[in-house]
Length: 498
Ligand code: SF4
Ligand code: SF4
Image (cartoon, rainbow, N blue to C red; front, side):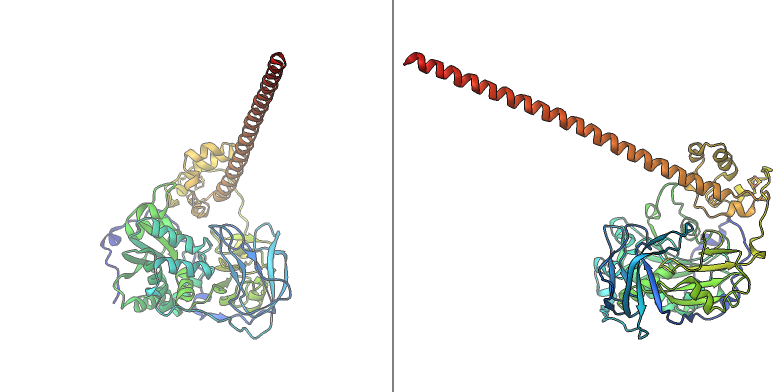
């Protein structure tokens, strides 16, 4: 049996975190169902961190499943591929899955119903590829962080080649209530997930793989342990069920004992983290040659008739997913993309699934009961819950007093917006909202400052250039004058000699 040999894990005492009600059942207990192919798929060009992809198709063009439809731009970006065969129906703005409800450029594909793959190019043995070749295949397949971060995975693989990484941590925590897409993936597709982890390890040259799974997922733990059994370098570790165990810094601390410094990256302590869904996408991309065109999405919430996990093509509308789960039994009081703690609200279900969509929640009125905010009673529960050892009460007091910069000194930038402090606050103070708002304001001020500085530098360069040009003109005029005087003197001398 492949089991953890991490002695210190038994001794670790976790003082942070909260235990929100899981609400993962019954969706977690049902096998993943396949969403019937929608008539149209809408693919936003920006569904990853970085620059948007650039269309390489034209309206009316026929495409096959897996064919490139938009290429990546710049160092941090990801390409898009057709999730089914059909015809490009539009390249135009379409409502984006964003809290603003605004539209963004997207490619719409009209499905032909045949779902025919383009010709794929699997490499045979992925372990015969060089690390660079693995990264290139992951980049070409458009794989991004599937846990919701959507950072292009190939960029992380390249980072692993630049810095010494001893440990690959695979995040199978899935600590957010309601979500169970990773749980089902690990139960049903463990062999592919373990293969993907080993391919990533090969690409970054890590010594070992530690895959952390919360101990409230015994079936996933058993399936992953069975799949990892033949590989000594892969350790499947049961970690305590506690929110936010699925946060990178917390999982690294629990699995390796290493603390990522404030403002630092996992790589600074010789670790890289990938989500278990990303590992499976890497398996598909490198072992099978398939680009990222579909994913598992949890459809859950008290308003959904029959919650479950669905395998869906990227670009399907959230309303189609909810419909496939029996529709709504009551008008949803709130729509959330992702989990209830770190997900973001949506205005409508008529927006598409993107690569980072782990779940869609249609919450009932009972689930979102409004609670009235009261004054802080200085109970310090928020302090005890914070996984980053911050003082949420002090930070929120400063922010409310209009001193967001001072809150930075108390660690505002280290806040991972997990919402644990808000969750435990008996005064119902929406602490994490204050932090999100302040971080957004500070980022906007920073951008404005950078713009001002860039404008100042441009103006300085312009005056320097103008001064230089004026000097050059004056020197040229002086030279011309001297030449004229020399010529005049020569003429006078010549006339005198004659
Ligand atoms: S948990 Fe709420 S009431 Fe208690 S100290 Fe923190 S902010 Fe104040
Ligand atoms: S302060 Fe930030 S990191 Fe700490 S519990 Fe609150 S939201 Fe989470």
